[in-house]
Length: 127
Image (tube, rainbow, N blue to C red; front, side, top):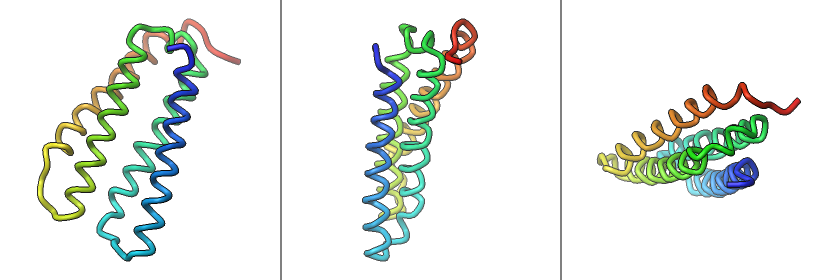
């Protein structure tokens, strides 16, 4: 994908807005049992997505890899599943397959980023 860096950062900003809205609801309604979900939205959604976007910007060879688009999709689908599962657990305390699968998919997406960084980041970097 041509502008994977911008796409990742844009998705990160969407996660940030979602986290802020969720946090405002949390504080206003007193449902502090969802605080852990709120943290996951902001850290895995906003912070990590934005960081990955900055890595793709800093090392353009990573974004040109055939693995890059798959890495983006795997990671973002994984955190969406993980966060849905986390919200479900925070709501009623019952285990859910969303959290378990989402965790594994998110880890795979992060491992794919590690692979891209290790194999592609040394060949070309922005100053």
